[in-house]
Image (cartoon, rainbow, N blue to C red):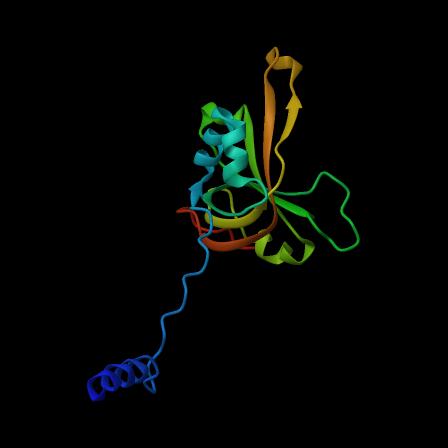
Length: 165
């Protein structure tokens, strides 16, 4: 009986030792990082698979800024989706698809500092893909991949010197 009590006491002490930190459970994994060209390739190759990867998920995308613009749609009083950042794509894809991150009005100052060619990491919530017919391309269409509620995670300025204003 004496021998049975010792392992039980040791086990209880080993799990409850003061100062010992129990391992934290791993947080759920977020979708893997992708480049803007990877997002475009996924959407052009298989829209159903791309929906599984990006739609209704928070996604982090790495790429270069093509341009920063005001939203073309009316902005509500809260200032949601007031501005957008388009990411550069290879020339072959840029005629068929655009990858666009939408930002709220309070992100204006940070977005105003972005230059074309700046390497960025953006995080946004994947929204439904929009498809615009383009009669000039004889049946081709333009697909807009949208990410809403976006944040700039990282910025690396382009190699060219910044203009002073």
